[in-house]
Length: 561
Image 1: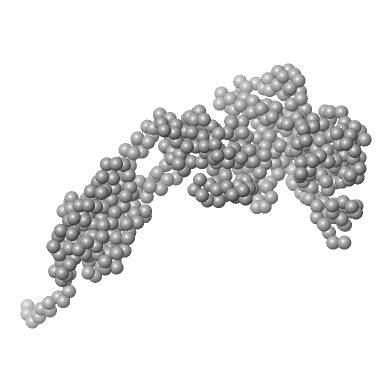
Image 2: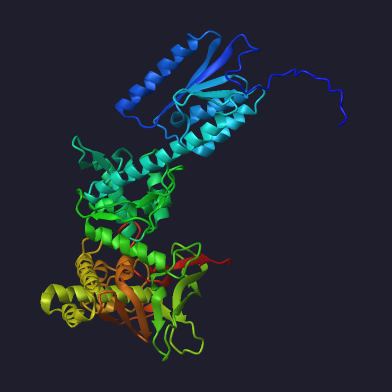
């Protein structure tokens, strides 16, 4: 075998992995890292002890100079995302401000195996390399065997973290089973925490909650309510402006009626601690009457019915809100599921000089027609649908008030055979019926001026003031007093109880969610039929409808002369 002449070239840079790199430097810049995972008193004592210990250790060790004490307080070690001091320490090491890091143990440094090894390898690849010394395990990452032991022990630390997470989750579930919610009331609008942990209503914040619910059930959208709160200078509990999603979260929060649902969210990954919605992966716990509610249950049920209806509507689109009458079905043909289609009709109208708007104008108003072009059913005005529906409700209210258990709606409900339903279904039907009666009796009996409502078809009205064209300003007080009222449509009642309506000419049969059908007439009326009705102006005063464009809700578009 041929022998070669080999000449040794000695190294010019130290690449040894042995112990602390102190040979070429007079002073070694040493930093210490401390961490506690919770903020209780015992952990706080350990936190301060670690800082004091490492400051004294580094300052009293020859050849070492203190590069800094990096400490994260009440921060979990399973992820470095929120550990600001830890991340700052790594950046300082990469900038050459740190030569060596000392920490108590692997679990104090990180409880995530990947984070631990990534940081160790990153620091070792620097020039010169930066080592980490774990006191408890007696591991120096600059040693050749250090990474092997570090991998094993950091995996054990991660498994210990998983076990702790399981124990905490078990303890929390036990609290939920006892009806003890875990809620930070300092970050919850409407309530303060009492001296014994009880829920105390905050009167000022409760007014905002009540305002949101009342405006929503009166027909306003979440976006509009948010704009109104911002316009009045109201802020959220965190001092931010109101947005529609914040309004909707409040409307769906059962805690405002005194109930409490626990474990709505779960933590699937103990390393990231990210919570997600509980979609059935874990049990939920519902506590009735846990505390004093801010909102009564009638208002709550009404709001939930509107939210559910908005979610199931098929007429989703950007822009103006869809009409509640999307569930109307044509009954003129022997076919099923032929829904009525909403259109906007336009007519031209010359408004007389002396009225608020002059010249040639175009009126637009919504109408409904069958989707099937072969159907001969007439066009139905949406304003006639609204007026007839409210007249039907007032007729039911007058009858129930006068006859009680002998009223028409009571007899209809008694004829329903609830035995054909399961217990849960019959309970829902009965609850919907009782809720409908509450809403029915809550309808106002007077208009905004305190005058008793005149319901067309129920109350006697002056024939001279009805179904005739009036001129603005010519109606006397007696005519105004005798005229029938143009009723304000309660869309909340329609959304809460009406599943669908079958249209047959002038009559509509509404199917309710409490098992009975309600017949409504007067739906074929046109705009001219509402001339002579009494309406409420924007300033709260009363006036007679003398022109088509004065009907509430009709849009008026001016045209060029």
